[in-house]
Image 1 (cartoon, one colour):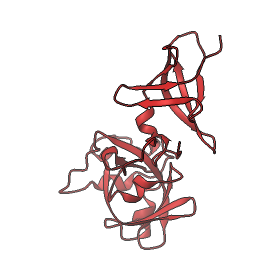
Image 2 (cartoon, rainbow, N blue to C red; image 1 turned 120 degrees about the vertical axis):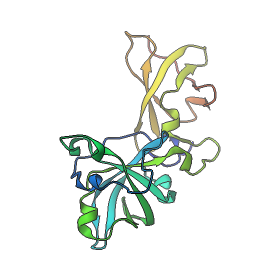
Image 3 (cartoon, rainbow, N blue to C red; image 1 turned 180 degrees about the vertical axis):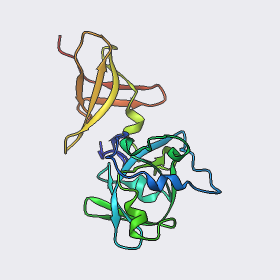
Length: 218
């Protein structure tokens, strides 16, 4: 089972992560003449760390070790970090839509150029922004590969037909991912099941269920 983190291919999906806080001034400018509303299937895939170079480049921290969705999408929606919201919270909170002119991996980071940003100050003003890409624009996955975002919320059932709970998150451990399962019973503890062939029989997305070879401790 191939694995990868937040927005790349994986036996796990692109989970939304709150970004760090940063200035909100750039979001007040809006996107005149364009519909910049956040798509209903938007998935958070990265956060902006700050400017890259002096010509408006951006430096981003992707949530995936293989950020294919971030690299292939030609439009990104940006939202200000949670604490960067203006005090009067009004129209200025609309997402900022950026047309991506170029993007590449730089070590553990991603650097990008946008047609809307022309200098370092404009790029730096977006520090802390949360970057979203529509799920519909994610690259297709191979057989037995999944995005984290497609697994969260699925029910988990074992071979005995016992419903174990619901996937609430995934943990990256290095060699593989681990399913975090909220138990069906209120008095039971959270289950952690490695997302590997030895324990996961199949993922039935259409049926909303992950079938596993797992017997919780009594």
